[in-house]
Length: 190
Image: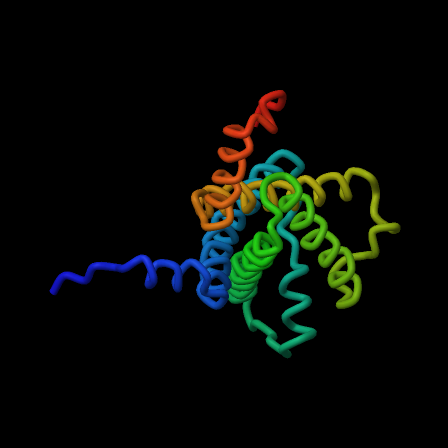
């Protein structure tokens, strides 16, 4: 059976707040997954260069909050990786929620970066998984900030690519076209 969508049905889908929320969450999860892969690669490369051992911060937080106590070293690594990937993927949802405010591109990425890194700086010391930032040396802070920036930039690029052509972008493009036709923005390049 072929179903032809009418204009009325299409408008219903365009103005569906729950649908927009679901779309933002879904695209955010995909962006978070890609960003987690990017930060993981960034950390692997950095650890090879600096000879740093993998952090056990995620495991310490999990032990504090859930009581999980892996018995062996291999179980610790497995649980730590599962938490790392889950946590990173879920943080992508916040990127989707940011987009619902109308922010996109660099402003949305900067806000997302601040939320992620700020939460890390508060949460890890709270669970004795890392010292407070004021007790860290500049190199450690810079490396941590760099990794979080890799995450946020990747999430932003992936999210914006998945969201390209969304309803709000189409509305904005129509407005720009109308303003150009009226000659109101002929002096600006958009």
